[in-house]
Image (cartoon, rainbow, N blue to C red; front, top):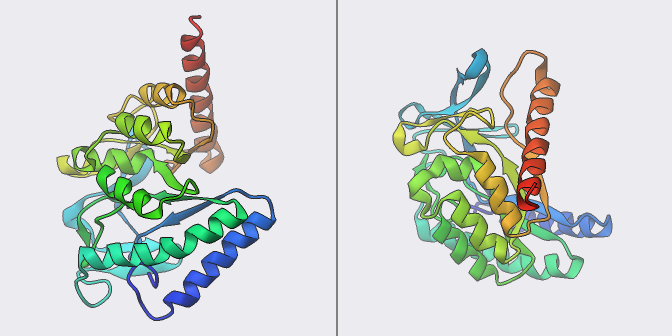
Length: 263
């Protein structure tokens, strides 16, 4: 939030991030994630999905707080006032203009995560950049570096629905062909926010056919990481949820590869 909202300590926090990039480069780790959210990820009470598994949900009329690790921000104004969209853009530009030279120097790729959820304003803080295709396009244009790209959270993009400007498949084709997608968070949701909110579902249960997503990734010759994300609470705990998700992912990869080879 110091960086996103230009709060006291911004330059110290930015320097810590630059040192983090240098440490990653020195350890031969080539990827770092960044999220430009001033007041965290917002959720409402968990809701049941298939088989009674409980999963994260978001209903805008009930949204009262944002969370990020050990921090919580409360509505209606998480930081005491309403911020402008221009402030958020200016603070992003200040950040990324200082990040790019270091990222290029140490050969670390910075993937920027979408706002979660991608709605216009939460707690007085607008989310004008990483809540739409056009925002991403402009943000990467400002960065003007092959070392700054997209941390593509499919769940966030599906949450946004039509408000994102382009759907998941179009987005993969556009940024994927530029080799600007560095990692893919593979998850599905029940519906876009515009239809009353969403619940995170099992990969095979939401409104998106995830096989289409995997085909699009193959189409653009994506060669990065695809991983499970935001697992539902299942009997057997996280290991059971992870096993289901990874098994589903591996089956999709095998299916689209076989399909492409005409088997």
